[in-house]
Length: 290
Image 1 (cartoon, one colour):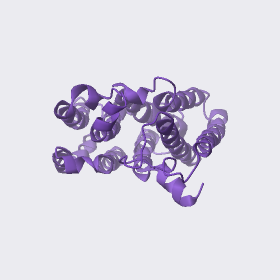
Image 2 (tube, rainbow, N blue to C red):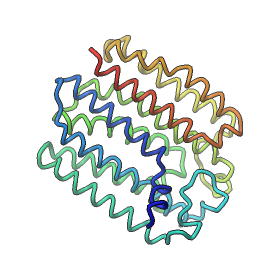
Image 3 (cartoon, rainbow, N blue to C red):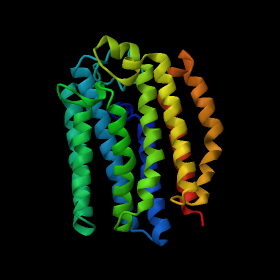
Image 4 (tube, rainbow, N blue to C red):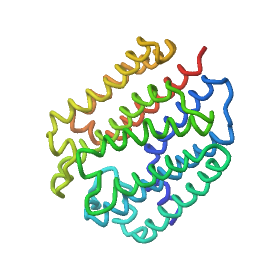
């Protein structure tokens, strides 16, 4: 696989989004003790990147196998359907990346806690079940929930566990708005692809609900991320400094307005990814501020 093909199938916007749970998890570990195991945090960051790239490759492979990709498809890596890379090569690369991630994860299991093995296996299983099999989760209305759980609570608590050696109550609370925003990225993707998905028998939320109602769902999910932070600060579960996330509220509103127009939907993933990254950075900053 060429470097250009690897970069395309890696899908940089999704990789950037992967950074957010790792940063928030590291910030939580730092807030809890003003110390964290940097080697373990860096290890799990690399694992997160490898697994995300592997998941993107699995999506590319299974979408091709299921006949979902075409040269006219929006937002795909397209390295298989273009004939640039054979399907079996993408499959082998995905498996190889998952194996490397598993090897790096075993280091954390040995030196930190065996619980990380279970969490890693859950993430790997989700990657395969999401895209593969006769009934992939990505073709159902449950795709956003799975992404919410994996890239919200699971990744943030696993990162804190690796960096700190334990999971704090604040980690579960902080993972909720992060999970909402990752789910919003997938919702934006599915809203953009709703017509093509419907033709192939996929039953994503936008296919089931239709364009207008699905747009209001994504609006509700984004606003729920802000509401979760406000409620958590108000109840004392997050520090007042977490309110710095409200700086991103105008960006969220403008992003949702752009998605209300068909031309804006063509950039749904990078637009929602940008919002996710900015809010994640602000949340991480709010957690490390005194």
